[in-house]
Image 1 (cartoon, one colour):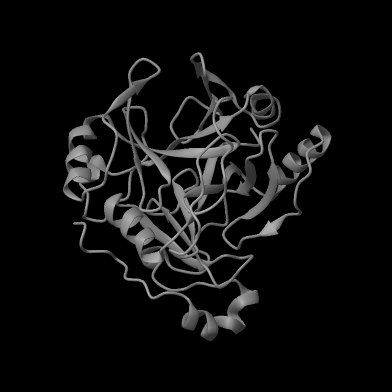
Image 2 (cartoon, rainbow, N blue to C red):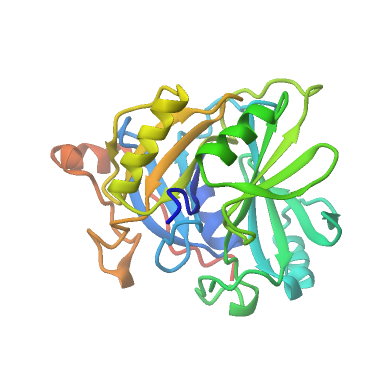
Length: 317
C-alpha cells in the first residue's frame, strides 16, 4: 500500500468569513463540513468545505482573518491555483452560473490536448479552476443549489509555481509515491494515480516574481496518508531524505506533520481519519462551532469575538 494516496486538502489565507461561506457553499455548492477555529490562533475561524462526508481529496479550507488583511501575491515558490473537478458536460452550466452571479473568469482553455478548464478567483483573489472531465467517479455534494450532475466532485489538481521543478519533482516521485502522468515544455503533472484528486502540477516559472503570503494565497497543501502508522513511516522517509518537519499535531479530525518542500511550499502529511463526524453527526456537519478540547474553556470568548455568519447561504440558489 502506498504511503501517500493523493491530495487531502488545501488551506488558504482569506479575508471576510461570510465571503468564504458565500463563495464556497453558495457559488461553488460545496458543503461546510466543519466550523472550527485555527488550532494555532483560536480567535480566527477555520472553515472546511468539501463533499457530503468531507472526504480527503475534496476539502478546501480557509483561515478568514478579516478584510483588513494585506493581500498576498501569486508567484513562484507558492501553490497558486487549486483546481476543482466537475463533469465534462457541465461547461455551459458553469459559464451561465458564473455570469449570473457576476463572478469574473477567463474564457475556456485547454491543456494536455483536450483538458478543458476555466480560471476564476474567489472573493479574496485566490486562484481557482474548474476542470471539466469524464474521469472522475466521485459523487459531488448535492445541496439543491446545483444539479447533481454538475456538482463539484472534489479537487482535481493543485498547481505550484517554482524557479525550477526538478527538486520538488524528485521529492514527490522518490519519497511520496507520485509518478509522471503528463508533461509539456514548462509543466509536469505528477500523481499517485492518473485520476482527479491525485494530481500535482509543477510549473517552471523562473521569470515570475516570488509569491508573497497574505490574503488570497494558499498557506499549505496536505497529502493523504491512510493512518497513523503510514504517517510514521512517512516521517522516517522525510528524516532519511534530510527534510526538517514538525512533530505530529493532533487536528482532531486527522493528525498532521508539516515540512517545507525544496521549492519553499509548505506540505502537510494528514491521516485520512478519524474524519469530520467524530464530534458531529453526519447530517449536521458544519452547523455548530466545534472546538478542540484545549479551547473549550474559551468558548464564550470565541463566540463573542468571532464574526456572526449566515449558513446556509440562500441567495445563490
